[in-house]
Length: 83
Image 1 (spheres, rainbow, N blue to C red):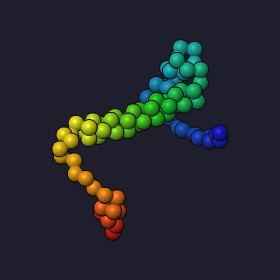
Image 2 (cartoon, rainbow, N blue to C red; image 1 turned 90 degrees about the horizontal axis):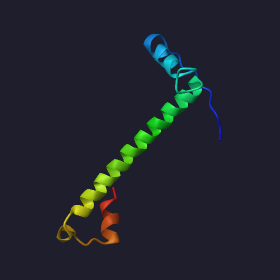
Image 3 (cartoon, rainbow, N blue to C red; image 1 turned 45 degrees about the horizontal axis):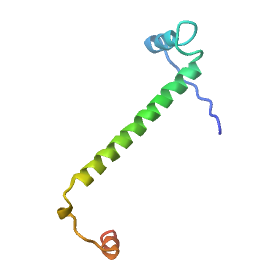
Image 4 (cartoon, rainbow, N blue to C red; image 1 turned 90 degrees about the vertical axis):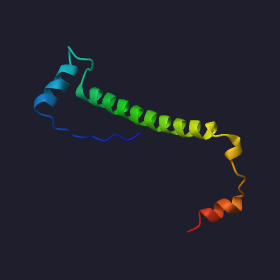
């Protein structure tokens, strides 16, 4: 696993907010730990959104009555996708 070092500059209100969440009185021992957790949470949120979108699409597909489906051949699918 490779590592990348990044520098982020914060000032004012954002810097103060981070400071309250790091150290003796905060939830995190250091800023790196805090940022990694924020990134993990954001990654999970994005993955959950993608899952929810897929789930909704599948629910719509499975709720469609069978009588609305039409048989289609592989050749029809190939032809439909040709430029």
